[in-house]
Length: 256
Image 1 (cartoon, helix red, strand yellow):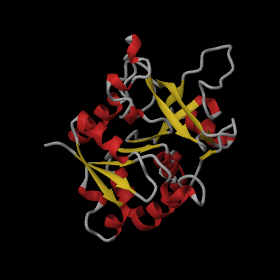
Image 2 (cartoon, rainbow, N blue to C red):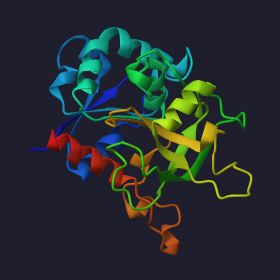
Image 3 (cartoon, one colour):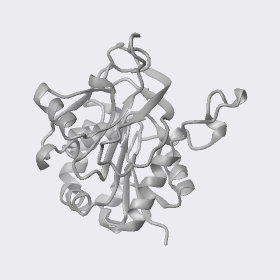
Image 4 (cartoon, rainbow, N blue to C red):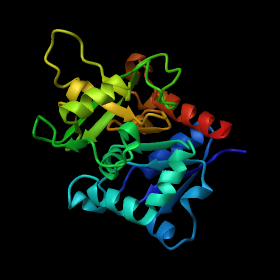
């Protein structure tokens, strides 16, 4: 049977349909559920084999990007989320969803801690960045979502607060434990911008938890799942699909 995939919709999220299309193409069964339905008990997080927090501007980002979303997740569903992740079920947070995972403490979860250990803050450019970027998978990462990737992922970013930052000790622990799953591809000896569109530390685009079943990233792999979405398809370029990330997640969920 196809794994059931919960895609959480909150007021202001706007990439849930894109995530559902990616899940469907990857072989899963997506269900977009409003967070109020989860609150009311109509369905439960633990009814699903995979969880996706999509991109957008949850609750208008009125308290900061992803912060209110993170607060709701932690205080209303914290126990279920910890059990879900603790059982090894795959979790994906994209853009605003990544911000929520980090600010809720589910990522990077160094040494099992669920206190906030990093943040996503304002882009170094001081403006909203909307452009295509290349992401290089880290081979030593335990991340189940990026395993077996044979080529960089090429997909867009669209955010104003996407600069990954962790204090020195936390950043060193992230690197030492190989929790970086994806980095922006920045050729040597050039200005990192715009290849690293937000100024993230160590060109970090996405991180995982020590168990490898949670992935958060700022770029949008769900927006490049078909060759026709490549911005230079008219020149015959089709490489770098983000669909492989979703296929890995679905295959892992199906194996549990």
